[in-house]
Length: 274
Picture 1 (cartoon, rainbow, N blue to C red):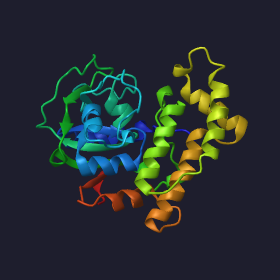
Picture 2 (cartoon, helix red, strand yellow):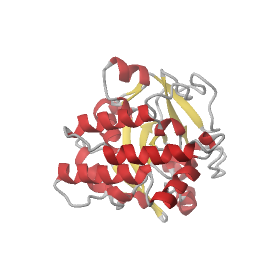
Picture 3 (tube, helix red, strand yellow):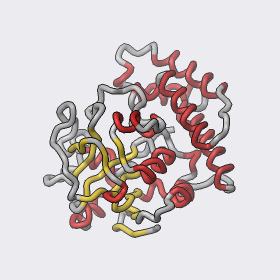
Picture 4 (tube, one colour):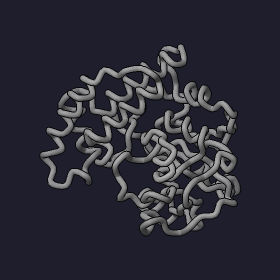
């Protein structure tokens, strides 16, 4: 399944709510993983170095192995509301990530830097050193195309090749098993990984073609790796919550123990829903 990035449907809403958006920094959970959201609500948002120091699950990070990211070991990547809003998914992390993923609304009083361990990739990308405390999380922004989607209908994992390696997926399995306290049947994932990598090896620069590779796997085998993971997560969350085919909002409400405000970004405006 493909990740939805319908940012154009939210342009009007953003333009009429610029006062709201300009009050926050944003940290987006681009793989939509609600286990990660739970950890962030519990511990705050931590750099990779602090995650390791506190022995927290590495699923908490964007990538288990990708230490060549702009964050590096010590920085957390954030988006700020662009002063010159062009709604470009190529140059604005706000457009690409905030308008397509669950995002934490963070205090504008946070001390930030304009450069992490490397130069930013997006024009509106800024960085926080070390950690963002729970107290600085002022809310969660949820685009409406996600709110009522069933867990098994969402495309987990971003379009980064590092997230489709055996090491990353085994880490994903281990962290997910630890969170739910249940063993995961590994064979469907192993089969899907074998299919996926048979296609990846055909590409000269596969890191540039992850979405196309997943699409080819889906066409050839009927489902891609993200479909398999979504099905597993659906079963785990169903058992955990005692709900049949839970929706994204159902899980979010269950892990939001401190009742952090949740705002739904709609085509027509912004509405507090939790």
